[in-house]
Every structure is written in structure tokens, then in C-alpha cells.
Image (cartoon, rainbow, N blue to C red; front, side, top):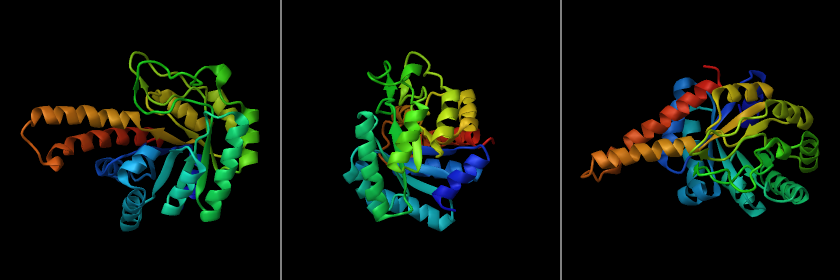
Length: 287
């Protein structure tokens, strides 16, 4: 099954596909090992910064090697891409899907850039899936002192179902990422905002395309379950993985001060990431 078919299957079964960002080989193995153990499909995400760090073609080759060797439904997404040129770059390299992110632009500017991105991407590969965001929810997967300036986490700024419908029709995107109370990153001193389940349901009905939930780290299990039932088909998790990696690596380096072989002190951080991914995949797939 290709990615479009996997998404359709998830929607029919009222489950969601986990999307996990990586920036190194340990992250890739952590995500793949967890998904393979549970026998569920999974999406690997790389942001522009992560792609620059790993190498664009190298990320494609790594994910493709796992998919072909194990005949496994693992896919690669070019997460948060801020220009049409970088969308084209990712599609040419062989990514299965790509996100054009114009959420900080005006509504009209976002439509114009997204429409161009869809046109250019489909000209390179008609089967690539193109996603776009509507509504600013922050830009970085990290620990936050406070809600980022301009992030739309109050109901008056949530994505409007009628605007979402127009956005999808005028751009031709395959997947839509709304602002419904979600937020990139984890708040240090308080819980992340709650999701508007009714708004998710209304946007899914108005747009007619699968919805993607960004900023999954920090969302409650109950909200996840309700969001999936309401129309979310893909859920992004990044900050939780980064936090597990960082905290575990710090402990390893403290305990093994004289160790210089990376594979010896990177094992436990990889296992910590894998545990996070496994728990999320169980929840998203009703396991």
C-alpha cells in the first residue's frame, strides 16, 4: 500500500498514523523498531534543519532501505518546508510527502504559495502528497517558557471551517493541518492547551481531506482519542522524542565519563526514544 492508501485505511479504522521527527540514525531505528514491533505503519519526518543535518538524499536512502528490505509501510515526509524551491528539492529527492508551511503568511499569500507548491510538486511526482497549514501554532519543537507570540491557541483564532474549505479547493492539497488548540513544543510550567474536538470535526467535514495534527507533544490521551474519532489521520510527535534523547544522553555521559565510543553511550538514548514512540503508537492505533 502507498501512503495515500495507508491514510485512507487509518481513517476507516478510526486510527491515526504516527509521524515522528528524526535527525540521526538512532532516531530512525527507534521509530522503526517500535513500529515494527507493533506492526503498524509509520511516517518519518525531517524538518528543513533536520534535512540539512542528515542529508536530503541520505534520509531518503535510509527510509527506502528499511521499506524495501522488510517490505514495511514506513514513509518519509518533508516536514515544515517554507519555500516552493525546497518543496521541489524534497520531491526530487524522493520524499513520499511534503508540507508547505505558509501559516505565518496572510490567508491569500498562503493560498498563493501553497497552490504553486502543489503545482510544482505534482509536476515532478504526481503521486507525492502535499500538505499545508492554516493557522499559526509556533515553529519549534522544544521546551517553552510561554506560548509563542502569535500562536493561535485560543478559540477565536482557530482555523475557520469555511476558510479551510476554500483553502483546500483553491490549492488542491492532499492533506490539511489546522489550528485547533494544538501547539508546537512543550510548555515547561503548565499543561499544553486542550484541543477543540468539535472544530476538528467541522473542518474535516468542510474540507473533505484527511487532517494532520501538528504539535502532538503535550496533548492528553483523551484529546488524542477524541481527535482521531473526529477526523485526525496523522499525528506529529517531536518534542517528546527530543526530550527523551537529551535527558537520557546526559545521564549516560555523566555515568560513563571515560567512554568515547558513541555506540556504547547512544544505546540507552535510542531505547528511551523507542519507548516514547511505542507508547504513542499504541495509543494512536488502539492497541
